[in-house]
Image (cartoon, rainbow, N blue to C red; front, side, top):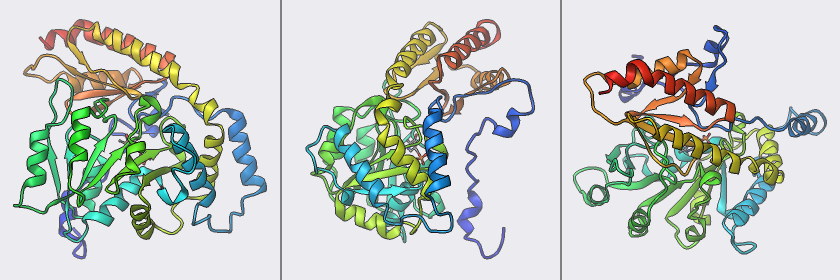
Length: 385
Ligand SMILES: *Cc1c(COP(=O)(O)O)cnc(C)c1O
């Protein structure tokens, strides 16, 4: 360990974006890899939109100039989309309600800096959930308090949540991070969970991550405008097909947005990413047309996986499914299943005692099903019983 580094960093390991393998592995074998591990869209941008972006780079963009640091046009376009997506009256959301991030990951870090740094607070998460909240908190030396969820529905343990907020032994909880619908389990917030969040004191920030909003069509944005301690995070990395460009946004009361703007880096969003986000918003109806078919594929995958007696599959409001083996066995069959799927060319996410499988294109989903069905039939199902 280098002597000038913070000693607590020694406990951390760098995030591996694809724990199951990286793209370099793809070139080694003849197998095509169905990448169903990170919940991206299976579809690239349509060729004419890519062309449009390339022409913007060629003709308009000045590579020697810094990007628009105020991101004014993009914020206005995002505000208009938020209004449309939540059926709000015109002008209900303005650029003053929006902060842009280099992916919503950056906004998570900004929220942590703005609320919990310098021993000011800890965060609360309900496991299993998106790992980035805990990882980013640890890099900033911010304590993470975790509570559990009930396996039947993955609803969080509200009694444990309440106790965590009330405790006085450690650093107080300053921010609660919820995903709506949750990753990796796919369940949206229930009425009881929302009521609990509504009852939190106003010195606790409530972060509601709507990364999968375009699939779930469930949003707390209308309520957010009345709640200065709530913030909604969204991303262009999933339904909008822009994972490569790293664009996310926060929606909140202007006072909270002003704090996020203070802590963000001045030119956090490259010009091409701003242009790409503006372009997909302008063509949102075309791009989002792919979603009903994807949701139908999700149902098909869900129904088929439910036919496997050894698997337990949960309903999902997002673009992925979560499954576990029903029976506890001496040898956990998941690592083997994960590796065998990968060897056949299907990359999924092995996490939280289960597999999270992104809904891909119909062909990818069909291959996933056939591979799973054939792997489960002979050896694994026997070892699972
Ligand atoms: C994918 C995902 C994000 C998106 O992160 P970006 O940094 O915008 O790519 C955020 N939150 C959750 C829960 C996600 O699953």
